[in-house]
Amino acid sequence: MKSILKLFLATLLVVAISTGCKKYEEGPSVSVLTRTMRLCGEWKITSVVKNGFDITDSFVTACGGSGFVLHIQRDRILHNEFGKFHTEGGIVPVESRWQWEDDKSNVYFSERPAAPFEFSYEIIKLKGKELGLRYTDGMDVTVLRFK
Image (cartoon, rainbow, N blue to C red; front, side, top):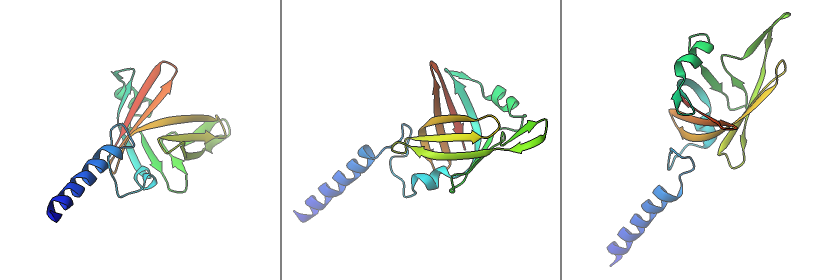
C-alpha cells in the first residue's frame, strides 16, 4: 500500500511540474537556473520573422553583415552592435540598460543619450542556450530568435 501511495505522489508531482510551471510560451517548463541567469550572456541572432515573413538576411545586412549580438550583463548593462552613435563630434557611447517588467514575462531595453529609444519584448523562450523575443508595434509582430 505504501509503494502505491509513493508512486501516486511521484506521478502527481511530475504532472504538476510539467504542466503548471511553464512561464514562457516555448519553455522551458522547469529550470534550476534563475531567469536572470538564463537571460544574461552573449546572444547571437539566428532568425528574425516579421508578420510571418523571414527578414533575417535584411536584418543582418542592416547590422553591417556580421549578424547581431546582444551582450546582456547581470548589472543591467546591455551591449550590442548598435552600441555607439556616430555624430559630427565623433563616436558617442550609448548608455544601454535592461530590466524585467511585470512578472518577468517581458524584458525592457532602453538606450540613451543621443537618440533615446525604449523597447519592451515579450519573452517566448528562455532556455540556457536559446532566447526568443516577441516585439509588437501596432499591427506588426516581430519575433527574434537567438542562440
